Length: 432
Image (cartoon, rainbow, N blue to C red; front, side):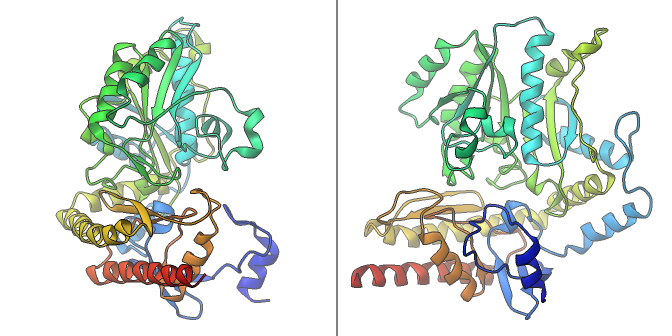
């Protein structure tokens, strides 16, 4: 059996419909923005391999740092021990995070970082003696991970359908749009003395369909949360590290979170690592002679030295001016493509063209519902791959989120393939 056949026999792939699934393509190498399969075919990774790989594949600087660290210390239990990569990363993060954060708690990925955050918030109120607070507020269309706590604070939909009756109750509200602020404020005031925390994806709801909203609207909402002493949790797992154009999405707002969650681009797309940062006020509620006030949470690979080293190396790359110029280049090209897409939008072939930093997205108008199960995604991915681009739409939501090392030529090829697909789709629709 070849690798593809062995994969089909042994592997269960994530977010993949298993019946009659297409064979997985064996990738043997990555080079900057390219993925290369065993036959030598090259694909531009236009979605940064699930939004994590910001510096591209095979980054030699990060690889060298991981190699050097692996020769010294690969893993150590993080209860009772510490190590330089973990301390250095924490120190670097606390200097740039958008808010008054003072402590870093390490975990394994984005989902666990949000689990830690909601556990911190729930236990905070118990530790300070306020037993009335038992409700969590989150946005409709939110996604915070696939573990049970993270699913509970996410939109009830296709991702959570099988587990609906096992999830704890959450108060869901709409994202602010400039017109509904007063309505949202009234909803919050109904539960103000019962609310533990408010968790939100700032400016961009990724898995919910690359939905975008404005910082000034979120600021108004956060201001009320602060007035009511509601703990604000920013899920920046996707939006951190310049995805929205600034270091963190929170940099666009005046009001800052009390807890922030990070992962994905944290290690430059090389290894799994999660971070939950909190303010001194949150942390102080866990410092007590009463041992039951301890945060009883941890992971076997908490603060893994190799992952922390990768994150420090990625951090160093981000802070170099060349990377910022590359980000600006992507944004400039997206803005030009945005104007081209508006032509298709006016003819009602697509809708909701939108851009936030290095991300551009829109929906293809089909006869099916706008959701993750829309069948056009299969045709779109197949068309893109045939033309050397890896684009994985979410149903009929097409988006581009490239690694920062992508070239202008590669970006233009991505746009050309998307336009080619739209023209093909329009022609087929006209013939039907």
